Length: 504
Image (tube, rainbow, N blue to C red; front, side):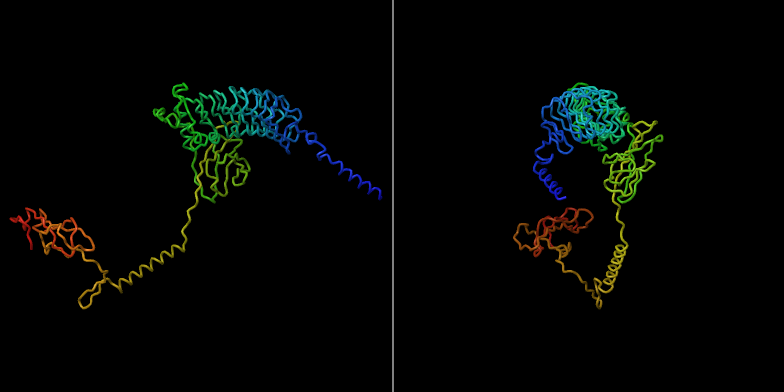
């Protein structure tokens, strides 16, 4: 038994001395099957910027994020993703891919993100994207796309963000969206293309949440009156795709590049447009007011019964049963949306999308919800206190009136309690006892400490019967009121036949 213990100890010592397969004696590339010059970290494989003209032959099966960007890849062979059953993100941007081909992504059923931007792709065929049933984001901007097959995106049932900007597309069908499912699509970037014709009724029929993520700026759009009114309404509603790029929305006034004008800055081009043709293009949303802390129920009203109903929140979250991720919004069995405790985050546009065999994808109902705080109700204590205070003040005023009147009469003589006031010159001087003098106004006199305006005595011309009238002029001395002058009227009874000043 002892020799067995010694043998086990010796084997352990030999294992420590020779090293384990995870030590530096065994290269990690052979263990993890990591391609040469690539970086392998957990489930991430990065082979970016290596000048690769072909995909490495052996790829680790545990790769979930594969980055092959900034290389010189020209072709992708069919079935090359078969070993990567855990792949979730694939970056192929900044390469030289000019075509994809059938079966390239047939083994990528779990892929969520595909970046094909900044390549030289010129067309997308009907089966180029087969096998991407779980794809959510597809980046195709900055290519040379001229043609899209009518069903190029037919199998992308879960696609929510599609970026087709900076290409050479001259047309795009919004009626069937080239096979896309409008139930999930939230972002459609068609900016910086060559779109010269757009069906306005098809744009108006799109779901509201897709209008909020539809980017059409920097295209040679026609200066159509109905398109102008539709974009104006989207801008007034605050749709981010139009509001954030308002300066980039341009149109051609005369179908030549030199006649390009901005939709929202050159209103003279559209001053003769009548709003009558634009009426009825969109169904107006319903405005609702909700109080914080209360409950709210929204119903999806459609023309015919729907098989499936989904909602889109103001945060662009697709809501299905049982509800939102945070649990604040519930989608009930009848398709209605219920909020048990309304908060500020619930303010905005809620869109109901109903689908079924007898419904088109534009069967939507919109609710514009405004959230307000409830007004605080006045407390009973404050009202009673205010009433009591009013009664006390009234009682004090009554007592003051009874026991401390402003004038008290004693033995027939009234004595008034008044604040001392400086006698007014107009009170000391009256029209009957004024001393009229010919003293020039610039004669030296002792001025009072308080400057007043001089008062002239001037008889009126009509109806005064010789009585004098007061008028304001320069300063005079309160201690020498005799320096006043009289302007005698010719029609005054007291100044008839007198040419000089008269004194009394």
